Image 1 (cartoon, one colour):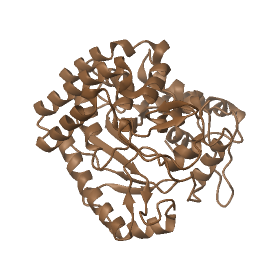
Image 2 (spheres, helix red, strand yellow):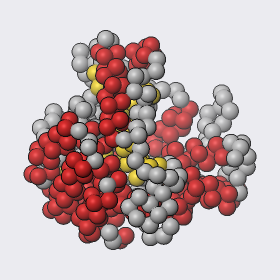
Image 3 (tube, rainbow, N blue to C red):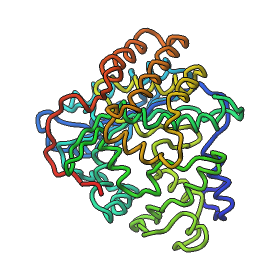
Length: 413
């Protein structure tokens, strides 16, 4: 399909449904790790995009095949190459991160393993028209969106959508299970604690995201064919930006859904490039982009990203672990409770008894699956240590002592 071809509403529905879930064998693994960057000598200063570019531009191809991007607030994101297995992905991303950390250290910079930068006021450091438009869109509803854009960091686990079967290898069951275990993952890996207006959040990063445009951030409703559910969600979502040729600024519409635009209510007809750009701005906790992208996990200290990568891949790719996780999240299946479950996970973490019980079962099942699947001692030990330190105690990284925030938080509500 041509990027500049004008789309009909029906053509857009068909495209989104098909593109969201590419059918095929499972087993491949990818990860995107995002970090705030800091100069310890001037911790409240935000490194400029010129400095970040200079520190990384000379690296050339990374040894593991990953790619570096600079995010709106200067966060660095390393997107791994797709690994044929969990072990391959972990080894490749470790190699890439080692090179990136060394390059940054040569310029006095470090990667900060937290889910939300608490010490610097959110600031856009790029003139990229996409990010400028998105910042304007979020700015109409307060500072929450800009904080997410510029100060947040996550671990995004990427797994195959699945095949066309009816079992745990099939895309229908994998989509369902990803949603069911999502609040558990959010709670267990929460690492952005804040107290705002007397309410404590263990993942304020995710709370901030939920506090922006609900049409683009909440979990899609389940209940039918996943492809149809996703297409319905994507077309109902608000359009955040409309690209314009340089040097014109991009348009930032108000209250324009993609479906309305397709029906002729926008400034011009919709092209495939417009639709793809729109899909790239949708940020529900699990996003189908041909593969399943888990977006609810806060960044972890050090090499802690290995644990969510291992746990998620084990629960989805091992049928015994999938059975256990499905049973453990039985109480999270009611569609009427879905958003409440996500909010409870972001607020209380594993202090919620139901989430704590489900998490212990899920993590224990994942650990057993990693042993069966030959994940190797280093990965297994990392998961076992996380279970012992956090999950078995009903805790998460957000419960560790952290220094107080030094800027005014954008409040929810």
